Length: 233
Image: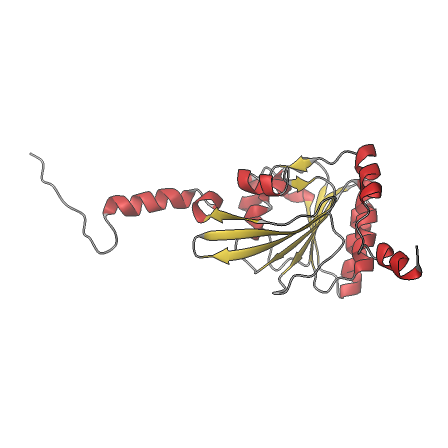
């Protein structure tokens, strides 16, 4: 192998089917269902139970709803949130049966400190799930995250609110896009196969209570039609 190919392979730019087969053969991949059958089919099982997941999204469009199953699946270990845009809702955590003392929020003073904290948490067997809000990650840093997660079997979710997704050597990469009727999830990369495709999830699938709101609105006859009053007796 010449130096150029060796450099590209070191950066994770070349897919090595033989190496991937040997790796998955010795340690079969397991997945956590997302809660949406269409998305599970696209991801061939759901969210990976170990490794690095890259999520590109606009802020506050439903990205946490899509990742909710991954969060609730963590029955033990610490859940680390690094530089979250807002404090997590205690009521939401209680609904997911996650004790608040298991959730640790870190707000490092610099990007380098945030990256260092994420890698140390990923290496620790005490941490089950790490969410990192960070932009502009390098191939080298993501590869270090991958190695750390392989050692501890932890899940590291990289959340980026960048409008332009980039290619990173992660276990799984998705792009969440808003639409008039819900969300579109586009598969950008999945380790072990040439992945592509997207699924659309309706708003009532994501938030079932909206279905009952729509039914109630239909029962009323719409905003512009008054309710009919019928005198009885």
